[in-house]
Amino acid sequence: MLNALEVFTTVVVGLMVGVEFSVLFVINPILNALPEDSGQLGHAHGGRMLGAVMPFWYIGSVALVLVWTGAGLVITAGALLVLSVVMSILLLVPINNRNKKWTPENRPADWKEQLHRWERWHYVRVAVIMAAFALLVTALT
Image (cartoon, rainbow, N blue to C red):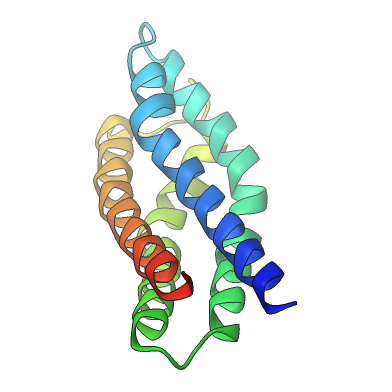
């Protein structure tokens, strides 16, 4: 049973890292290359879609890692995942929540700067969750 839970934990956290990695290095560059302001509309749609599932995925990942507390690497991985949740709530979600509601008619003059700020914080968050995943895999294997 424990081996199955180790695999499940690794897959859940690994897929979350993969999704966030692809947002950063695949989806965002595609959206940012779209003409005029089409990218912002894509960001808004993506924010609505992923914003509906990622809170559960992040919290679920933290909960799964808590099952494995005891080893130093797992504790560090869990702390990094908690840090990513705190970063998300304090830094990324507020920007994302505003962006989800923007249309060409109502978005603020600094909308591009706000999206760039979100992307910069997302780089940091991806680095944090990648480190957490690496520690978790090392601890569980």
